[in-house]
Structure formats: C-alpha cells, structure tokens
Length: 363
Image 1 (cartoon, helix red, strand yellow):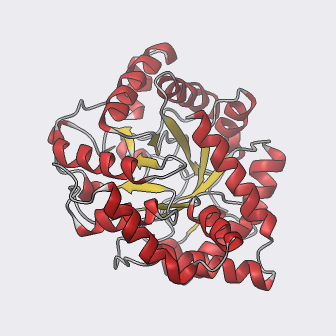
Image 2: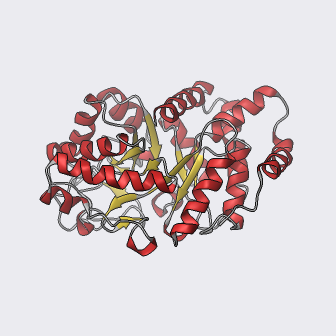
C-alpha cells in the first residue's frame, strides 16, 4: 500500500507543526535530542492510517526517535511493510528505530497469521537446540524482521523460569531456562543471530520478572519476597561479553535493588545496579510507561521525567490507552521544563543522545 504522504508534504507539515515550539537553534537541538529518546506506539495497521501518518510527521520533525509496533498494528504483511517504509522514509537525519516484540511462541507480532515464519517459544528452543542451533534459528527470525523493515527486536527475555506459577514468563514458556548461566548462553545466541544480519535487540525485563506471581501489565509488582540474585547473572555475563545492545527495565520494585520504586523509575536500579555494579554503559530503555503498573501511580509526563532522571536513555510510550496525537510535543515540553528548573541536569539528555547515536550507528 503506498503512503499518501509525500516527502515534500512531510517537510511542509513538519515545519508547520514545529514552528510554535522552536524559537532558536539551541531550542531546536534540545527538542531533537529529547525527541530521539522517544519510541512511540501508534494506531492503525497500514500506512494510510491517521495515527501512522501523524507519527511519521513527528519522526520527520525530529520529535520522535522511532516507532513501536503492537498487535493491532500487525494485521497483514502488506500493512506491516507499508508502515515500516513510511517511518523509514520520514527521517531526515538519524534513522528511526522501528521496533517490534518478536520473541517466538506467544509473543511474536510477525507469524503465520500475517504471512511470516512462526518460531517456537524460548523454552522449547533451548530444550531442543544447542546455543549454536538457537543462534541459527534466531538469525532466520532476524532476516525476516530486517526484510520487513524492522531494525530493533524488543527481545530476548532473559528472565529466569524457575517459578512455574509465574503468569507472565513461565506460563508462556518465555524463559530459556531456570538458571542464570543457561539463560545467558541462549540470550547471547539470540543476540548474535540478530547481529549477524544487522538487527538490534533489547534484553528484558531488568532486574528480573521470573519470580513474581503478578503481571506488571496489570498492577505494580514488588519483587522483594521472591527475587533471587541469580536473576542478574544473564546481564552480568552478557555485559562482560559485549553481547548487549539495549537493556529494558521492568516496572518491578525491590526494597534494596530499586529502593522500593519500579526499576524503570529508579536511579538505584539503573545507575547503581545496571551501570555501576554490572558495568553496562549502553542504552537503557523503559518498558511501556503507559502500562498499568506506572499509569496507576504517576501522570505520564511525571513518569517520563522520573525515568530520565533514573538513567534511562530510551522511553517506550505505546500511546494506546487514549491515543494523543500531540504526545511528543507534551513530553518534550515537560522534559525541557524539568531541565530549565534544574530537576533534570542537561547532561542527562546529552548522555542519552550520545548513547542513542552510537546505538543507531552500530545497528
């Protein structure tokens, strides 16, 4: 399906939308740096959809760093690939991140239903294959993703599957194993398979979603009674091996690891555990800040500011509960106000911009 929004119209529309918010060169640079931190969802399953056209305009204007596809965006192969072409063509400078959840099993947006090759869940892949065999499977997955226009897979899951009653990981076979060393080996195979064809990946859900009996999509999660130290082992081993592109933090609280806050909003978790203790210095991103675990406790712009202060570089906003066509404008404005007031140091935005630029250069 061809896009109805030409490049000339992109430029005109983007300039008109941006004009009220950009008053000088430095402001434009600030807007662009913050915009690159936003990975946004959208409504629609084809390039003609108003929600998709709106996000493309934001990407063109530098107010969004990329697009995240959810289930409602992935109905047909023709629609999916028209959308990825639309978003890729919208960017004027830095290429956009075009992301999708493609783990295999129950979490794969591209599968038999829309014309792609289904992949077994992680648990089955690890049970039936060596790490080298898994790498080949995931290289095949990545080739299909790249051909469809995606450059970022929001996977693999590196949670441990030791709690059989877990409703979000073990229930669906999303874990490669029950111990950190096994999960690290197969997680590294997943990443290597994707890197072999130039697709980025994001490890999730830091610091570990495998022990809880609660789904963070539905309400806040406290890991304190159930979490175990082995859940950090995949991050430690893969960080030492240079086998991480992005780490996605979960909306998971722990009295010590996160200071009682969700990890996505916790400087103790991101700057302390992930960066200082584990040693990972690449891009840290949030899980969707529109999920109930966050939405029930914080206004969205407040969650964004807290997530940036915690050390996150990339913010996932599905914009799905009540889609707001001007969400990037509101978020950029709130972040700039937080910098102006001293609540956020300007250096935090600059560091995020550097990490994202390096990531996009490597992918």
